[in-house]
Length: 328
Ligand SMILES: Cc1cc2nc3c(=O)[nH]c(=O)nc-3n(C[C@H](O)[C@H](O)[C@H](O)COP(=O)(O)O)c2cc1C
Image (cartoon, rainbow, N blue to C red; front, side, top):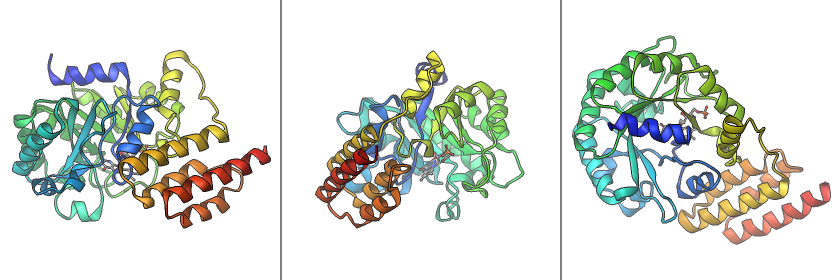
């Protein structure tokens, strides 16, 4: 069995994946989603240049916590030899729980593309090929690539680009249906996902504007993609994976979660954040996502911003719980 078949098998079991999100998909976030049906989850993107002399702090972005059975690690950079060294180091440190290495050729951030990294590689296909070749030469796991429609809006370079990377040994590609110039604006164009899936023999994962279980299932129905990345659709809704699976397999509509259940999940999420990467800035962001749509959410968001310890957060959730129970 080749690596494309390995990925095909994984996606056949569970086609809905937690997409990589820098600043978001840390261990706590991944565990929240895993406990609710995300079988495969990605790390935040990690710089191959940084890994060469990485501190334990950087490695925390890559290494799975004890209760995580697997991890997909996403790397970004521009130098093939740095990629090869990073793949070797990640394999050694993560060990058997490393499912795949993904190469980021999708990031549109200015500080990334100005260094020839991320989506800038779609403008440098030969360099992109060298990078894939370098990673494949070193890897004992599948090497995949995440890309966009194109670098420039109005062009559709992804199908040809994907074919070139497939020829270098990429085991799958993910396609976000926007150009780098679009950043996250406008609507994602799913037809490019379909075009790429028809251009290559390796599995394709679609990405862009999947905000509900129904969107996730629709992407599988409307394109030839084998898998679906869920990114912003997980904000405050880690249940989206179970919901998408129930909808796809049994035609079951998504369960409506009570305020109590949502606050319980927020408590659980903050507990995991406190244990694994106690960054209050992240905790505040996650909290506002779970509170969206609740009674007096705007006022509670103001209180969230003032929380500076885990204990204050827990006390605030007690208060919110008491408030929403009287609202009902
Ligand atoms: C906050 C944030 C961080 C992201 N970081 C990454 C990243 O590190 N690597 C990557 O390939 N894509 C990254 N993405 C892109 C997502 O994986 C996804 O392709 C994109 O958000 C489109 O999906 P959506 O419209 O369903 O959110 C990020 C997106 C967001 C919103």
